[in-house]
Image (tube, rainbow, N blue to C red; front, side, top):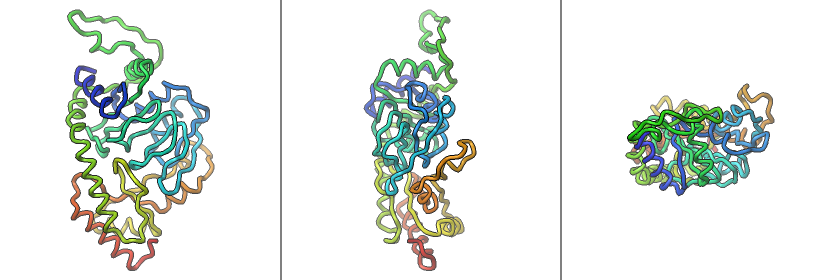
Length: 306
């Protein structure tokens, strides 16, 4: 919570167009704090097509969770209390925005939460950020990230160390630190250029994938490149046998026991059965993407993918 943390918070807020930013040790922690900053309806509406943190945060804060279905093209939810940017897509309205896939995008809603996990667009080992335009929310988020303490150790340091402080509510040990902030400051300078490269790789997929393959709807950050195919698991195995690792984003959250019995959502269910996340990262070349597309085309010759 030193000078570099403050510098990174300032620069990141400026980058995303927000007035304030609070660095955390993860996006999960950012979400945990965000749900405490504002009053949400109970149950909290959130997409079922996301990572667990989006729904675990309200659950941890004592809310019930109600999952909402996605738009079949963009995989986003038109309306939710906690909106999730999916792969770089977002269009719905909400109060809190989970921007873990949004590195390079602008601040949205009352509160935006960001991820700096190693696979994210702005990677720094780990870490997160909360951005907002309300000063009261900012000051409270600062305290909540540091066990509820109203003054950071750095703020109490100076010519004369001020050891005293107050605690008015239960917080988390979730603040950022100068070591990660230094990495973040460096990575932030490269983010726009790197997102352009991700876009170039995505455009290569668009050009060379078989025409029958459903491409992503759109993206502002190209965090993920997802396709939908029949015989998904067969293609996953074929690509793995040829040295190409893929993933699935995501298994619907209502399938996990922690959320109890939840209704099955048709668009979410259909997407889950067909979706594959293809490799998209900075260590790939255009040649690599073409090779992956050729493998998919080879597999399509003997299997129905559309």
